[in-house]
Length: 165
Image 1 (cartoon, rainbow, N blue to C red):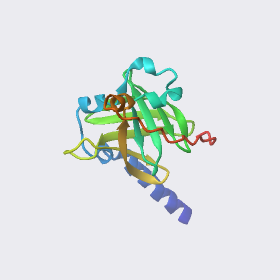
Image 2 (spheres, rainbow, N blue to C red):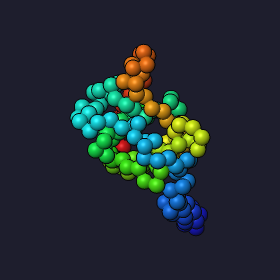
Image 3 (cartoon, rainbow, N blue to C red):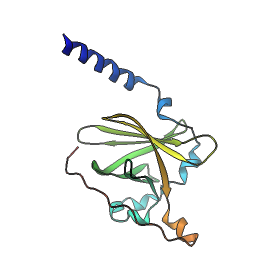
């Protein structure tokens, strides 16, 4: 009996999460031009993993380390510490940058939006095995940094996963 109640509660929770409107994944909608600054030329896709330090990246901090390079052809390359790396697709729909990638055990769905209406700060939102996450994400643009006379900081070391998930 307890097992049946547990399964019912979990099923309802999953159904509610799956049917929740995308607004729960959106902090502040932005127009497509806002997201355009994150995009690399399409010809940079091949070998992206070997040249990440030269590409525009969306990256988070140490609390949930991940980085993504978006390309003009709608593809992206990602690295998520202790999960893995790979490629997926992205688009801008209804003011939100949506990223999707198929992993061996699950589909990865990430949503980037403005942190608020007043600034250019961005957040990435997603659901993982621990539930809902909203993490600040920043643009790392080494070419723009060099043009401003700055030396781009080195990327943090990517912690490879052998979990196969």
